[in-house]
Image (cartoon, rainbow, N blue to C red; front, side):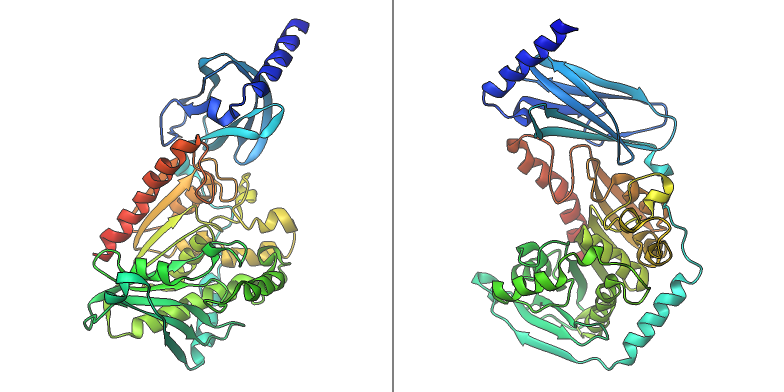
Amino acid sequence: MKKIASCFLALLAFGTAYGQSFLENVHLSVNNGFEGVYSKGDTVKVYAEVGKDTPAVMKIYQNGYFKEERQCLLPAGKNEVFCGAYDEATSLMFRLADPSHPSDSTTVGAIVAPEEFRPGFDEPADFQAFWKKQLKEMRKQKMKVKLTPVPIPGEDSLKFVCYDLEINCITARPVRGYLAMPRGARRHSLPIAINAHSAGKLTASYTKATVKKAVSLAGSGGGAIALDINAHGILNGQDNAYYETLQKELNGYSSWPITDHESYYFRGMFLRLVRALDYLCSRREWDGKRVLITGGSQGGAQSAALAGLDPRVRMVVVDVPAMWDVGGILAGRLSSWNKALEREGVDSPAREIVPYYDGANFMRHFTGQLVVNVGLIDTTCPPADVWAVYNVCPAASKVIYPCAWKGHSGKYSVPKEERKEMKAFMGRYLDDAINAYLK
């Protein structure tokens, strides 16, 4: 035992001395390749390919929860670091880290019998009645639309038009975003495409609506009426001071106390989507048939809400969608963001409220086409939760693309030189689906 300990310490000193990061030296993989999906009873094997001898700490997670920790001495070459089989639906994550620098790590995931996962919440009996009431109240208010032309940089200005869009709503803030479409579009010639944003700091570029994104979406397929909608109904194109002030005002909005059905923050976010679609469908350019919504993370939550609330939506394309199974904890799994029950307690008032905002219950009513990207090492929107929602969605056609190295927010647990290629590879699934639908 003393000899092993001495060897481990010697390797630890060596590993921190040669300068190469742990992630660059150690690459994890599973025995069935890129997707990491297994059937019940299959043998799950995890391999560590090591450039130089190194010590490591391996942590194993099951269904989002920490299960065990092991210390490893990894010689150069290919090492089998785990072997096991499961007879029930199970999500697994394996993380190898530098013992002296735990943040320097590599992770891989696997999932067993994902088709058997089901949401933690059943749909409330009055789910549809609740939302019909919300929409009825919203539509009582006469729609007032403000369109302000905005310049488009470069040659795109010859091909597209773009507007700063604002529409009143019964919510605290109006609908706001950028609306773009091809110049001179004919009557009934274009589909509708909506991009919904992920969560994050309001000062970050990815949380703001942009002309660039609206125009890019407007040019997808054969062209579209494209709306890059802001999740919070805030002004477009302002200076940083404006967004910094709002960041203080809305800081932690996803974890604000949940006290009743109609004051929950996401009610306004979801209603603004339907309000926006009501307007877009009134435009003469709409072909009267095709409506697509796409988004990642919180954008996936918004996509589910609009798809479940409005039957005009016929295509949903999402990446690591949030709020898909917020009741996962009730099924013995880590719930999806915003993890309301983990935060407030399974016996809190939130338990009676959040099912009305769960992507699972919205997607139970979507019968169009569905495309989903899911990451097997995503702890924000765990893969078992995403799959649970996917399984109960009665879509006419649906496909899910898993990746064993994919986490949240486009992060991949592979060396730097591979990340860009991996991200582009996975992103093509979504882009191809959007372009095909909008042709």
